[in-house]
Length: 76
Image 1 (tube, one colour):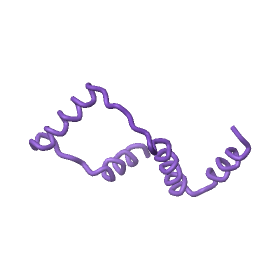
Image 2 (cartoon, helix red, strand yellow):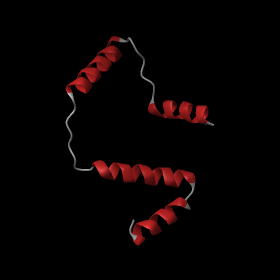
Image 3 (spheres, one colour):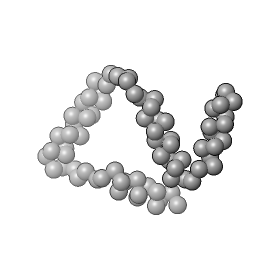
Image 4 (cartoon, helix red, strand yellow):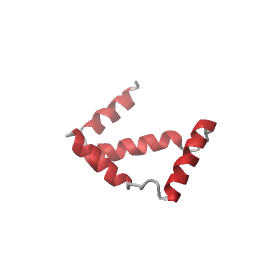
């Protein structure tokens, strides 16, 4: 790791938890910028199946914030 990267990491680790989470999210988002990727036939089929289940009312969507809150509570 370069000295500059080590300095950034060291500084970032001193940030409050919420700021570190925000920074991590932005860094991860930056890895996907401008890239396109192919979805396999298996995933395409799975996506279509799940979409049909949602549209047919067979399953109920749960907001992402709620899911993450529940996971966070379980991990404490």
